[in-house]
Amino acid sequence: MRTRLLILALLVIGVLIGCQQGSWKEVNSREGAFSILFPGTPTEKTQQADIANETIYMHIFLLQQKDSAYSVRYNDYPESIFQKKDANKILDDMRSAFVSKGTLLN
Image (tube, rainbow, N blue to C red):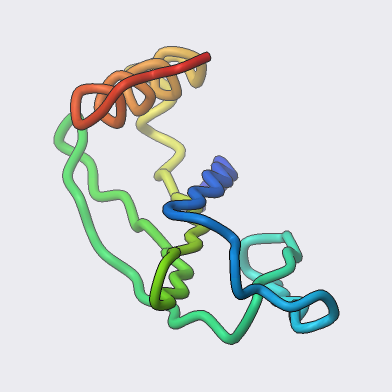
C-alpha cells in the first residue's frame, strides 16, 4: 500500500499579466485528493524517482503560457520509506533540493 504525501508546490513563474479574470478552470485529482484552479488546462505526467532504494511516483500538473508557468505536484511514497526516514525529513530534503536550484526567499 502506498502512502500519499501530498505536496502541492504551486510555482508561478513570470507575471500574471494577460490572465483574464474568470478564465481559471478547476482541476480535480481524485487520486491526489485535491482540486486547484489553473488559468487553462494543464498537462499531467508521472515520473519515477528512486529515493533510499525505493521508487516514488511524482505526479505533475503543468500549464505553460507565454509569460508564465503553473505547476502542482504530488508524490506517492511506498509505506516502507517512512520506516527509513521521518516524513518531516523527507519534506526538508525536498525543500533543500528545490532551493539548490534557486533562491529561497521566505
